[in-house]
Image (cartoon, rainbow, N blue to C red; front, side, top):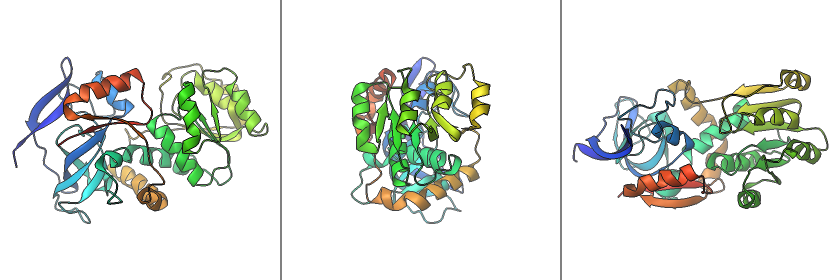
Length: 328
């Protein structure tokens, strides 16, 4: 095996395809030959020069999730062996080889599942199971609203909510064509979050009580609207801030409804915490992943040499589901 590999990095002037050394796995890590990787919104930020936790800066290999074959395992790794087909999350995914923590490496659960399909799953599954079940404390029969439901993680959130027993499931999207497709993924109602009256419509759909659990991928000025849509003693879990990281906050409305407002991110979690998130997710969802019941649509597949086009498509926000890149 060569000691060099091709990788997509953030260079001094943006995206660059370069040759770098193949990484080596630590004692609790695995080295994976990458067959496919998928893009996430955070990748755009890192490419633009922003830090994502401790990830970022010139020379950073981009990417957070991938699928491929195990090449080498660290001395303390158990249950994984060279040749295993796996899906992973972590960092430095956009390359021919990537290293993952053993707790963030999962066997591809079905022979029929392609690497292209497998790479769409790790981030969405772990993020939204943690948001809905662990932090959101979803109970059967409760109403759930997913802000930004037409994104990959949003579509997974709709499916997990329905699978785990939610009553009414509402999704929001500002795009009419995407809203029309949310029902395919479990939404009972689709709302336009750019419509100032959407909180009223959400309350109407719940018989005037308001939504029990809101997964907020937008925040910014949408935050107060989410609180208006929420039930008394409702929960709002802030997963993303696509609509802005700063906004006025209606403290009186927050207190009046006695809302639990919970912020989550993987950026400040220890590896032990991340492993536990994966364990809990698999305990609830593994059979449904293997059966294909939980799956995401793939919008476009690019070869590695066209990873720049993949970034351009994500930047233009003209996709439904995941953008995937494949390697030989």
